[in-house]
Amino acid sequence: MRFLVLLYGIVSYLAFLLVFVYFIAFVGEFYVPKTLSSEVKMSTTSALLVNIGLLILWGVQHTLMAREKFKQAISALIPHHIERSTYVLVSSITLAILIHFWQPMHGTLWSLENASWIWVIFFTGWGLVFIATFLTDHFDLFGLRQTWLHYVKKSYTSVEFTERLFYKWIRHPMMLGLILAFWAIPIMTTGHLVFAIGMSVYILVGIHFEEKGLAKHLGIDYQDYQKRTARIFPKIF
Image (tube, one colour):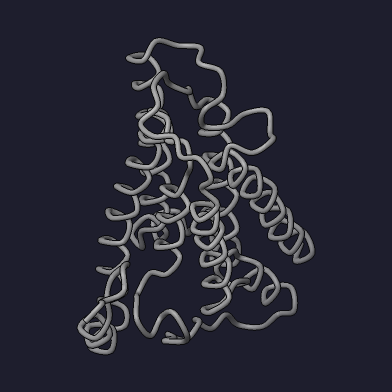
């Protein structure tokens, strides 16, 4: 049984990697079958309604499943050692649904030539996301640590709060990386704009709820950290 739990964690993680790599290509308009600006198949109004629905599905799933009250409510069905892996797996599924059913839209807001600097920002954003996961605990974040500890019969201990590297200046470097990646694109279509706005709104809402939970869990230490650092964008002065 413990091996099945470990296998579940590994499969959930691999599913995430597969979907997330495709997601990067989906956002960057690279050579994959479906991107944000593939062939338009719906009217603008219909496409907008579908896309807003997909963004709401994504946002609700992420926000709801990350809340402590939700975790407590499902603890009888989903024990702690697979809770994070389940979150990762369900998140991967909702992301795959968003990719598959996303509807490209007519219209282009800007089209930049010789925009190599845009691609530098784009990949810097994804690089920031990747590095930031390891500044806390990559394997805990994606549920592998929890399933491994269960497999070797060790008790789970929470990951310690860190202020390493980017976290010395901003509290959510992963979210900064995502915002950079979503907006840094040489050709901004209407569909991409809707996606970027929707995801940015979700990020702001998600951060609001996350910080409330962290302040409650960590107390005065996190409140002091909030006073000393910027939320997403580094303070210039």
